[in-house]
Length: 250
Image (cartoon, rainbow, N blue to C red; front, side):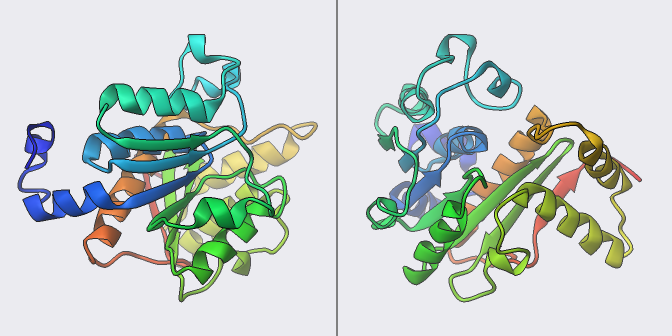
């Protein structure tokens, strides 16, 4: 095992470390995806493709892996440089473009695992999943629920994310409602999250949902753990099941 990853020992076997180093990861969206990418590169994933046409804004700095000096710069370009500063030997490909129906197939081809961290302001996140499923690529869907991190994994052979809704508008809120209803059904209510959902619904205008750095880092940890398990043929929970972690108590 390389000296860089020597402290991964016991948790990750040398053969497994070699395997994950060769896995090709597609990161669709470099918002919460930026935190996932840093966690992944430090863990040992060394072949990442980043796709995002957005630039860094000041409101991103409370939860994404960017700095004050990055404001106004392309997220994909900026993130790629940060990852290469951590591991200059990694293979980092980036595209300062939005994913569209026209470039979707070309961008997805050749990857082993995809992360769908795209904004739900069109049907592109659904199309992204559909194309990945056609190629038998598992898709990670991370969400930042403030004090909680969330991950669900769409299997190429299982239910699609559109089982929740085939309308992309407000999909993050629909996912949060799905989580609270699921947990309530299994007598593990998340009243703190339900309270945030209700307060958000009362806000005037179309403000983006509130998010914290805490949720980004927890979700990133889940994603990297799942990527490791998928790469080494270990079991994971697939959608409609999910991973959710928070220190909040009801």
